[in-house]
Image 1 (spheres, helix red, strand yellow):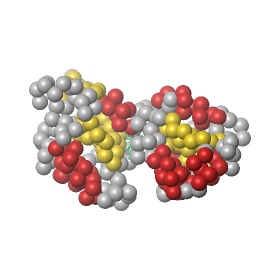
Image 2 (image 1 turned 120 degrees about the horizontal axis):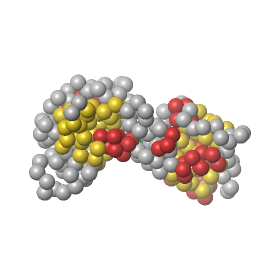
Image 3 (image 1 turned 180 degrees about the vertical axis):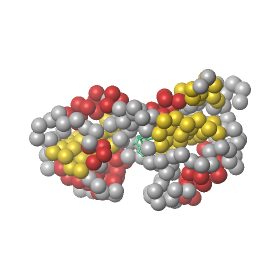
Image 4 (image 1 turned 45 degrees about the vertical axis):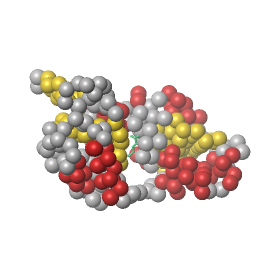
Length: 254
Ligand code: SAH
């Protein structure tokens, strides 16, 4: 088979945060597959390149479309935002290969990493991920709310810094408030909480607050929420948003 599939992540938004390797894969592709909002971010540099806008919310169907094109001999780039392996298309591609046509296993399939929202958000705030951290998606499309609560509890008991992806569900807007209520059982009221909207873009907005004050969530679909560990702290600055960091040493005072 001569076709190929590269699963790419565009980064969080700003063009300069798309890696050169991703830009090259996009440029060399004969076919792009992805959501319209993502494909809109890809410059038209390749004459004759086909764009397959997929509004399909079922990720594995999009993965199958991309694999099918590659099996026809096309050079396909499947486009995600951020990193394609972080709550995005890469896992769906491998699930589709595992459960799909035997010939797909012979395809040249690659994953090109991207700057995930969590890293862009953390960089904007300072260094909140300086110690051990974890990432949890609050979306309950693919897992139950019970699973989410169990993982929140485990992360809180382990005193991890927690990055929350998908904090605002259109269908269940109260979920983030529920997550905060759940975490308050184990985490101190003064725990630092960050809301980073549109990280890694020209419109980034950072809100620094605490777990007890984080009742009226300002999160939307483009917000990454970071909940600190017991060590996460702020450095006040006159008239500007404080820096937030988590010291790397566990011996630093809380
Ligand atoms: N693959 C993506 C994540 C997809 S899940 C990545 O690696 O970044 C979608 C969630 O990611 C959003 O609901 C939001 O929580 C987060 N997100 C994506 N882009 C963001 C950005 N520029 N700023 C803040 N959060 C973002």
